[in-house]
Image (cartoon, rainbow, N blue to C red; front, side):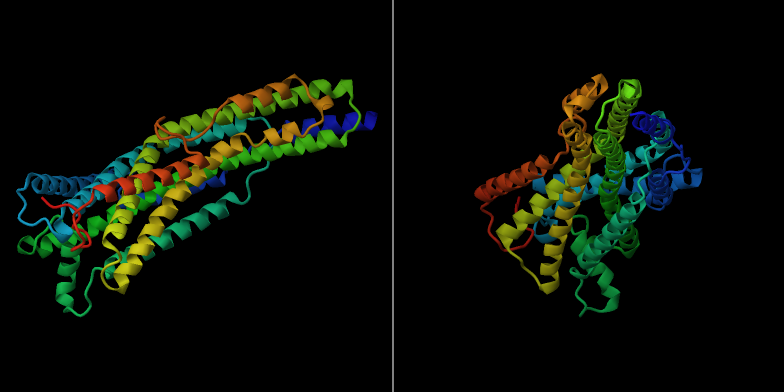
Length: 424
């Protein structure tokens, strides 16, 4: 009995309650590095003035394009447009408007997030140190974040490359390839008579920036969700380890009970602090989550509608691009939802270890922790409008199918052109 008591006391003094407080955190360093290099495509927090000026230039260019795109939509809806067919249809103009509007809002929101990341970093470190528990660091999170970065970068580049080559006729002279691509991809802005190389080159550059921003918003949500999930995973493993140690000591010792109660109280406080961290982070990324879900939902619905009503038209490259593009958008929104839903899933995962403990090891703090984990709802959300759990993925799929059926039912426009869905 005495040996058992000494074992638990030593464990509490040296392994549970006296943490090694690291000054280096893989997750914080990795996200900080991401925000450091994101200034190349306009996402600037508290960086140097030259990068802020660069971000302002990109923002002005995006706003100029967006203003022109909105005007083109108004002209088409009002019947003032000369041509509303093909790449200049109302659907194409509206899709272009949505694409650049997303880029503008994403640039603003991610820049705000980057500017607040230094304060967020201080909060992450404060929560880590305030736990006063010797929880081992997550040795695999850096590797997992690198894998996510590589996969999303490669897939995004492949999808964008197919987007470019699918709109180019390689039988044309090299001098006209740029003109053909711009008139095909940005037909909602240009007609042949208004095309200019001096406008096409900046537009080609800024469209690539907009594409990067679209993918970056999903990427940063996934990475931050992974960091929050990692924190919960470490806490849950700590609880599992402690429950296993309790089971190993078959005899209950009254003298060690205060130490156990103190340990479980610190664990309960750690979960309170972790829930606070999730809610604070959600205040910073909630608007970005809303934007990501809305824009991806729109383009998935648009792609499916055009594919169902018009079929896979065009050459082989266009058909391959359509399938790859649709799959890539679906994969991205699924990745965002699944990564964010893991935060909610892991916030309650410790309950299975608590339920598995023998009742004679329960104390008032274990009971409080159990009630806390059961009743406290922790999840990332889109500005409070919806929470990201695994069930929302099925809800989004059901909504897409519903909208598609409604659109198909009211569509009577024929199939003469792959993007000419509505005409003035």
